[in-house]
Length: 297
Image (cartoon, rainbow, N blue to C red; front, top):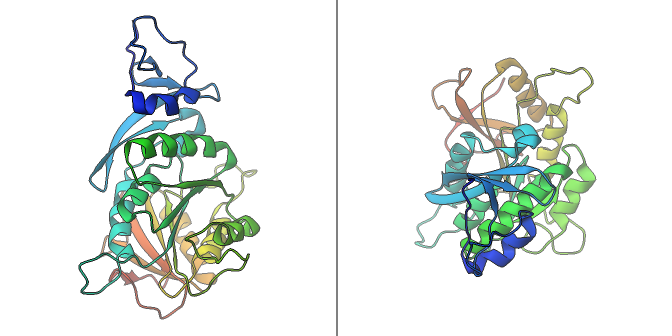
């Protein structure tokens, strides 16, 4: 017989909309069955999900993944690398014992299941606006994870938004829509407010299909649009799979007037199979926030 997971009463009502499996008579009335197999669940959109346990920024998280979404529906080792760099880069320099964040808003591009955004929201606190974005078909998975995790981790709050890279009107709407971000609610971007933009495992396009859009130029344009303010920066973290094509992404980013600084590894460009991390800043000649190496070519 398939194993059945139960959820504490406080979380049961929130999970009810995400469960299409009928309740089993043997279950206590205060709990709700959400599993239809060992660690497998049913989404409201009718596909099976798997629940995965992971650790980000010292926090144990449990998130749903969706194999039908391909690379967008799973968790990646690069997420932990990105989380650690973001925690370091987001904290402003100074002697105060209280933490001060450089940026009032964090945007995650290609957020997939939303695990990284959830961990960041918990780490940075309610004063920082965290927005996770992906293609429209991925948003329901992000919303599911953000709603479920937020119930068990009080204080976390994440906005889930659809955003296609290269849709600069939609990117501008993210900048100007919502309190606590880089806008004052009047539809104009406050250039003095700094934003952070993270893209984890976003450089994997390999040109396998002649009819599939090359995502590198739209990604570069979206980074350029969303990085604002004197302390604003982007963070790219991914496993190196095709060094030549990924170097082409950095060229496109530099062509926008942005500067790329390698954070990891420190001594040399990452080899194929290694995870690399790069900071992106708006102005050429700007100092690197993390003491990295400037990638001029």
